[in-house]
Length: 287
Image (cartoon, rainbow, N blue to C red; front, side, top):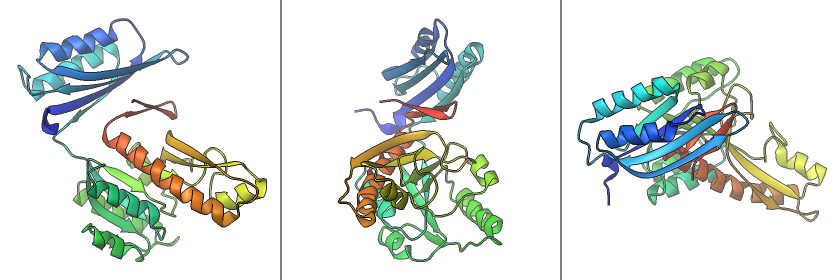
């Protein structure tokens, strides 16, 4: 089995044209890299091409610097947006929470079980309630209270902690605060939020009450990248569960929380495995 430090993943997107697959494959082969799997998608409406290539570096005949330079040259020639993730670099996560604990517990348990290949660097909360949960998993916990007057100062303090800890991805595990436009823009495509509704239905707060009032027969949960437009970021994963006229609001909340855990965990895992490409306000999620 190839060691994770010898693996790399290349994600590319560009206008569709002939020769894209061959150009990338020949570049990797020419440097001795062994392609382990490749997945691609063409959007015929947008005329865009997307590809994810995972390859083994242990047989390189050059070095990583030369390989990256060669990929950069091909990308420039083919007008590609590209991202290269080296296997030796483990992503570092920060989890933002408020008072709900179900998503936090689920992520930390999955991480302990080895399901999420990352380092959970810290937990940040605007309430002290979940400090014991973080302590149970030996994760540093930071309580940063917030109100309208201190919002920007609180975000600055949080961002200082993120930078100091080398965090590259933020998970909003039912963090009941709206991030500022500046903060969200600086962390574009690196903030994953779980919304307790099947977006775009019932955006904003209290979706289960509104779903109950409408008598819906399905409720859902949505994991998406946070953007400056509330609850309208590119969707990574969604799921639904059936409900009926017999379900109370409390029943809908309970069913929804089960979905939230599963949907958020899937989105986080795919992000960590570099399976997600964002374009035109939506995503391509490779198998």
